[in-house]
Length: 347
Image (cartoon, rainbow, N blue to C red; front, side, top):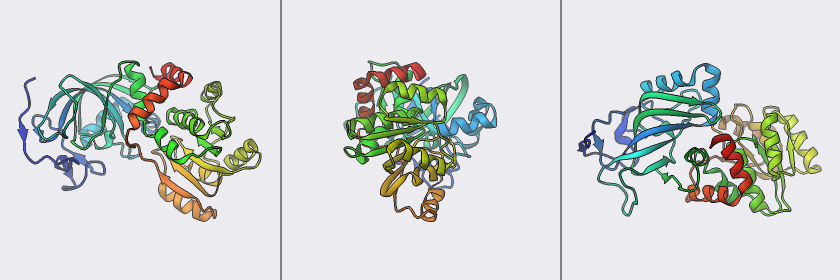
């Protein structure tokens, strides 16, 4: 297809594509403009190959019905893959088709480059022409379509030394490991809820690296299969089968696994609602609870901590940390067992 005409008025944060409400930012918007017959200044046009839907969103869609139908409906209604129930999206793999003027200075990006976007599908204007395949095990959807990335949008070129699907799965949760590295200290007690999932495994791996051999790492995982694979990594001091939605049971399991010590830092990577208080109740006063899962209700977390008298610092999970893509891909290279498990599941 010939190059699309460039029109003025593009903004780095994508406000020019917001249709409802006008003047807002694209992530909270109800509807965005996914007409790519023209491009705005600063945009990158991508031919989309795969959507990597976030775990909370994909789980919700599976419970509701056919994920392929729901994705098509959502994109038709909203101009983006922004799940109206979970409020989350995921990220995508695509090939650069066209670069509009006004991109960041010094950018090393060219037509034909294959990239993974590191911003949410919940803010990415997207058009889907056809769904080719749905792969529930990895929450990935192969599509034919187009999308645009704004000038402020982070991305990563796909590495040459690992399978693309493996890289895409890791980059989807690339913010997890760097956040763990910032928060965990040597010899901490660290609890990871949903430790057998994609972000949970990265949290466990990074906690072991920065916490050192004296750290006490406890992984909670409801799935027997995932718990078994987590034990096989040998990174946790204890892997506990527990329902993260039962806070009293979670607290009891953690105390039993640590000899009565509460967590210094807890990470919630659970992809279902109502897991907030499990992480909070298992954490010591003045400890840290980091909610990485998009299924989290921050109202429940804040009011719940108050209700049980827990003086803990509550962190909202941020999928972006400077250098997070390089950090996570390097960790997979440095930890062969973690990489092998990711390849088995997602590669």
